Image 1 (cartoon, rainbow, N blue to C red):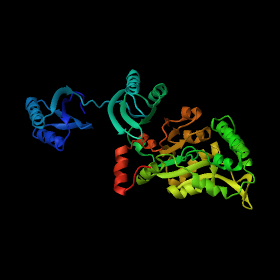
Image 2 (cartoon, rainbow, N blue to C red; image 1 turned 180 degrees about the horizontal axis):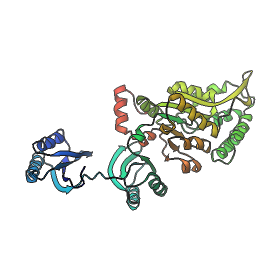
Image 3 (tube, rainbow, N blue to C red; image 1 turned 180 degrees about the vertical axis):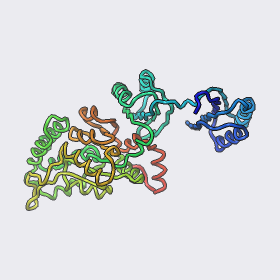
Image 4 (cartoon, one colour; image 1 turned 60 degrees about the horizontal axis):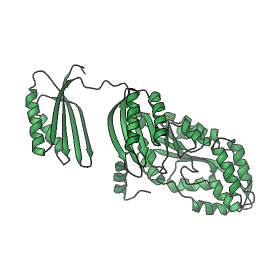
Length: 400
């Protein structure tokens, strides 16, 4: 479109009610205008409606202005008509910047906006995606490259103690189709091996080894075998008790349920044990899974594992296998984890999310979620709380 195009930016503001958009557009329909852009926002019952139209030199602009003012007077709203040229669409790239916090302070948003402006980016649109259990605000930003903006906002996010995700706009984000999740301290609260260790009387020792492994201070396979060895002789019936004690992360069911509606595939990949993860597969309708298997002889744990070990490298290999089976390109996968054992998987995925994660993983991930609600990942994918609630209401289910 010609950059010299004559345009009018028409803005109505005031109390929201049914029919405002139709009344304004109906009034404009009587004039030789073409719509270039149209946007509407409602905040606490207050509406801001903007229409950018183009016109030629023969168009009586004052007649258009009078028509708009007549609609505004009828609806008891404020109107503004501004002349200009160009369609304002010459933008270098479009990025989505998602900000999550609880609470989200004005000072944090000011700092984020200042950092965007200082980097040469322009905020084209701001939208709220959620107000609980966390506040999530999404900004459409143009004029900056992905990596440059992501690096600057990562620093600001740490300083303001908020989570910030930066992703390419358009179809790229909407194309995600496979979610691969870690289990311990991600899909569920706590660590399965620590629950088993409580029964074996070695909880403290196992917890120390687990912590070191998650921080990346110990080789995972070595640490896993060391911890499993401490379980030797434990009655296998304890596994039933552990399965009964599993507590899902808050929002886990909501996240899975919502994305299943959108035809996503789900996978879990765990350094834990199939004797436990298989029950999660059935409970949540998971499509694919990979985990380690405890050896059981004569009804007791031997302190050994059978089969290949699912470790840091094994998790990335599993993600690639699941993607092939689902017919999904790696670029359309999302990986969610919390510890060093998830590093390769996080880096291999199209979008890597560090969920309440150790620093080593937060630094490597594309984005971090620091609130204890797994369904906050939905907001990073551009799905609003209102959309989730509307779909749940249709199905007669509630947040969990």
